[in-house]
Image (cartoon, rainbow, N blue to C red):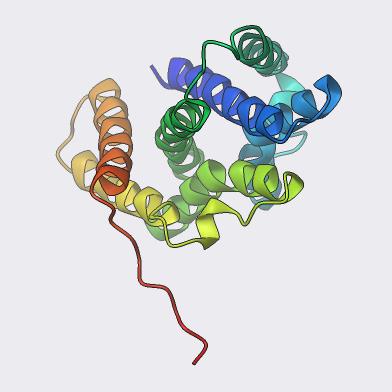
Length: 200
């Protein structure tokens, strides 16, 4: 289940990056680069922070193949994504839920404190999108009023709460991902925002 979620998250973020780049009318190479950094940016930063080098995608070419596949699907079926923003949002949300979980698990596997594990989960989920948005000259979603990183933190708390119940790991992973994805969908549907800080 964990490996499957990792592949799904990589594919989702690669497609999210590709769709954003195509919306900015980049050339095919530019679209691929944005897809690639969106998919692996957060995980690369996480691995560097915990001293796990070479980073994950350098040790397993399956991730590179999955990114190429995600890029290809996004390009080939871009006409089908007539509601580009909706498609981008859905892929980004799936990646958010899955990558939070992966970051949590990486922290747990080396015995880090739950608070640090939640931070790693948030970094894994959010920073590929931060790099994507910066390269595409957008203010990163994580820094805007939309609830984004906060959902990852909430998902991490839910994960450790459910873990204390001794649930089966597959159920734990699935439940945490569903909670994160569902909360983000509801946040957008019902327009939940964090208050902006005014400079005045």
